[in-house]
Length: 244
View (cartoon, rainbow, N blue to C red):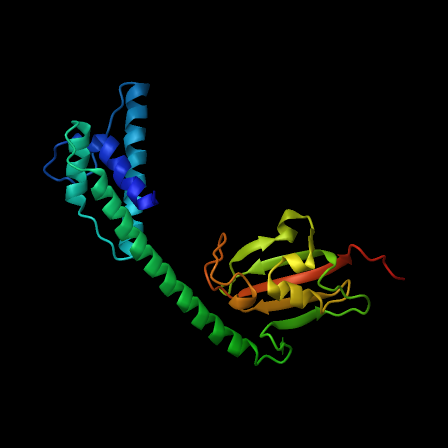
């Protein structure tokens, strides 16, 4: 069940204690005095449910889905009295409608990410030190070295930092203070191609188009079709002896 639908169900089942207060001004915040710990806990429970529902309502508003707050409040009170007038078909319809709108919003955002990434990379490619490969991968050499370079079948040890175009960091081995070790053919295409250009001890900056990154998949802070930036330091090719 989607979060928005969960919010609707939770609100319908539990309601908010605050909804039972009668006031000429329903938006006025009532000052509460707690007589005991049980009252304090009950109020905290109601407030937490209310905050959860309000957050879900705001999220729905952002994707142009409006729910009548007056009817939500009526549902609260009815549920508290055991008189709620709804059935599973209504909840399923809400689920389906929200799911459809969210998918449309995600698709629109993913398409925007593609166009935004293309425009950004086109400008970035004009920089003097940026090299563009046939696949569309872009990179800069920050620290150059001579020596062994890995192939796709090798396992490598690296330090890296990954950011979005706006500078948001989504992953970093530096932050964990622990290098990453992985087979080069088990990562995103931009990494597989780019790290093979590096010699041990070198440091590159990669600008990776979405089709060489995670594509339409979303993971953590990375939204579908995101262009990614990585600073990568190749520390070791694990399956090859070091050369002097």
